Length: 455
Ligand code: BES
Ligand code: MN
Ligand code: ZN
Image (cartoon, rainbow, N blue to C red; front, side, top):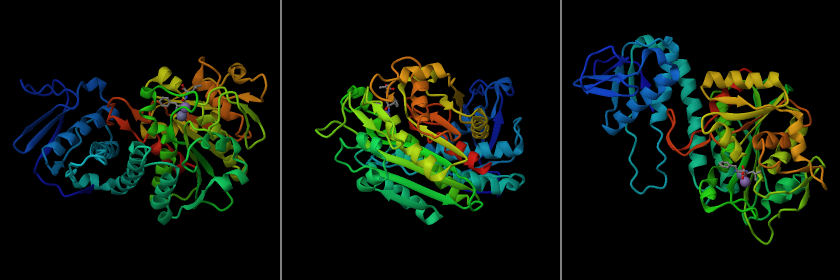
């Protein structure tokens, strides 16, 4: 998608609040469109309910409309909203770009997205650099969305690793892809326990982007990388399984964020880590009741093989902590159904061992309009993870499920500042929301980018 700044009169877009014009056919509801000769009216809804988010939603519906009508040029000459010119311009670009996202990889009859030109008045050209930056961020976000939308017959540990290499290698990211032998020699034994039931070889993916001050402690990003989660012997229902190609959402976000950071050539030290595997049933699979060993020496009582993500993350965050001594460690995971129960598909659930660090993540999420809600890390909940026979149990039961899952991971971060983001609800939508359609959202690529930028 390209943007130029030549002001033309063709297909001028006017932004209209409810009550601003009298028309039987146009009430100016949010996202409502009235196209008339060379003018397009776009409804913004009630003026007193207006926000950047509302604006993006309206523009997104205009983007879809233009695509449908195969209109490839519009012009925007004035900002009649209450947004600053900069917010207006960037929200406009973001919503148009995102409206063009269409996951049609598996369709024989692919419709090309022809909408590729927005004519903004010269006065918006001032934000050319910001638009450029945003386009690169969204390029990372689109990569995430594609990776998460692709099915597990196409995206499995090896192909996920290949995608990371293809997308990042030429951008100055150093990649190391480790197979089973190295996974075991690096002591990632708990990760291996989850992985060993699958015929697909697990991959441990390390992505280093060290373009900041030499020797400065990095930002570590760790993503859950279950390319499929059938639940193992604590098997899921077929309905529960159906969308579990998205269980690598955390790793998709990390890979997409690395791309956004590298494309924009941020001068920061960031390391991305993904433990990629499948959670399946076989004669070699781990079983409920097994007691396994983690990289940090702790024993884990496998209460439920479907609480596999935290086991893989235990070793992944421990590796990130001990090998990189990060200034901040953020893990992202489609970790618990409980996050969906608590916050739906709207807010990501967070757990942290350091409120100051969480504030940094929260501030970044506010810049990117990606919602995060902090859950209480109360020590009492930790008793739910206690096991009779091992150091810890991998399931805390039904109560406070997203908190106990986070607290399980906390055992392995060696007291480094850590923020856990449970994106089980927000990474993959069952119904359209805001500017996103069904399926993968690429949530938190923008947040991680903003976090890295401030780092
Ligand atoms: N990948 C799932 C969590 C999930 C559920 C993500 C729905 C997206 C949508 C995770 O591995 C899982 O199965 N968690 C269990 C944990 C339980 C057994 C303690 C859950 O949430 O039911
Ligand atoms: Mn599971
Ligand atoms: Zn899972």
